[in-house]
Amino acid sequence: MKFRTVTPVAYTPCISHSKRLLLLGSCFSENIGNKLQAYRFQTVINPFGVIYNPFSIAQSLERLIENRPFSAEELFEADGLWHSWAHHGAFSHREQSRTLQQINARYGEAAKWLPYVDGLILTFGSSWVYYYQDYPVANCHKLPADEFTLRQITVEEIIDRYVPLLTDLQKRNKDLRVILSVSPVRYPATAYRSNSTNKAILLLAAEALSRQLDFVHYFPAYEILIDDLRDYRFYADDLLHPSVLGVECIWQRFTEAYLDMPTRRLLPRILKINNALAHRPLHNDTESYQRFVRQTDAQVAQLEAELKSCVAKALPENDTVPRESLTNNH
Image (spheres, rainbow, N blue to C red):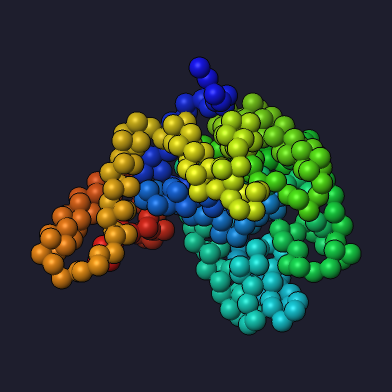
């Protein structure tokens, strides 16, 4: 007897530990990005911070292609903090120089990474775009609403913006694969009926892009949480974001769809090592614990050697964006 409807996801293996990944978009990008990072994939996650609308995500990619760092003239001050219209508030600081330094540190890392990216993972969050003096902003930074113009972009506008952009990126790297998803997080600031039409625009655009471009794949994160899981135990306390369990369920479907079999077989082993590294003993001076530490160190060293052997390409001048280190902190 079936007790749920399982959302089908096509098996398209395009991610392994040898691939370099860039994730941009809503907070759901960070959910998946953090899982990838925890399992030691080579990732750069949201170098502009969390971004919700497709236009701002496109602007971020275009700026990375230009390889043009940000200048002090592009920042503005509000409520004692210096902000950027292209970035999340996590970059804001009381000192202009500090804001600019944080922005360009992440920007430089991502701009250097982009030409070698094998997997681009984009998550659209909202089709509503706030404009400040005709500029589509990534974040309003809590400025008064009457300073902005709010407009809902269309399916056609998203397609027209992304087809040439993604095509250009794929020409620069013929091995590039793009995974599009729509964030399952609902937005109560607009009515839930409006939220449904909001997500529908994003879903239609993502579907059209995946049909039009053969290197673009659609991952149904929205459908898995809303249609498949559809139970509040899969939601966090705010009843809007996915819970830890919800993220784990979606992550399992993601791995089944995009990780090749040798990579998937590595995951339980990496998880076991991660759990060992996270272990904090009550007594760290016992012989049994010291033996545990030595065994874990040996496992870490072996895994690191295997993962390094997976990396086939090197960035210029031996300059890399490192995979999170498997360091034993016992």
